[in-house]
Length: 251
Image 1 (tube, rainbow, N blue to C red):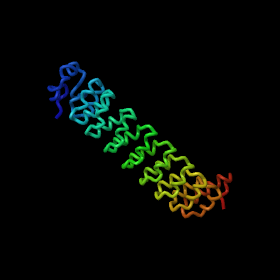
Image 2: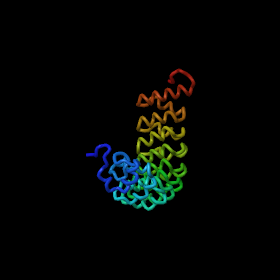
Image 3: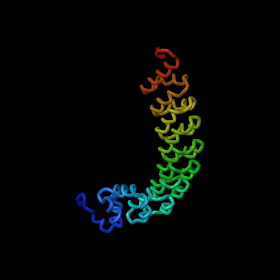
Image 4: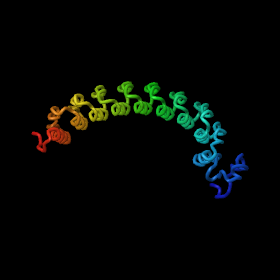
């Protein structure tokens, strides 16, 4: 049970700040306390007194170390890239300069590697394009320069290829026209150039055809007026109506 308000917690008796900060009202075992086993109270303490953070970088309690990393000087946290706890290493990866965080791109924890991938300079991102975790590769695909995205076009994971399909310039989408995943082809159909959208008008998936109707050449759209799916037929009629500038329904 927590001590009653106004009373010190048991660890105050063994805390070096009891006679200094605590005595002056600068910390509170129930609100801002670096010795508590509460992340919120530890954070409040170090936010108020960041000059004390470096002292706790080697603390036995992982959460105290992780919070101390947020406030300690950058020069003092570099050694924690090998900390035994992944939560600590994640905070380190988020604070170090991108070129220094690169040392963690092979970290065993995927969240650490995701943090690194979010911060690396674009020219270094290709080094993580073969990461074993698909979410790391998704982050890489979101940030790679367009000219290097082709490295991930054949990625085995659908979510990675979906990200690539959203980002590639329209003229570079041809290699994804026959992707085995419907969700990828739908994105391609929404963005493809007319001659490539034409190739998706006969796709097995009606939502792919629906998207392709909006992009394909007008002459080819006429072929979808008898599509098996009503939504595709409706979209084809509307596209042709807008293209001819008339309110009459195409025959």
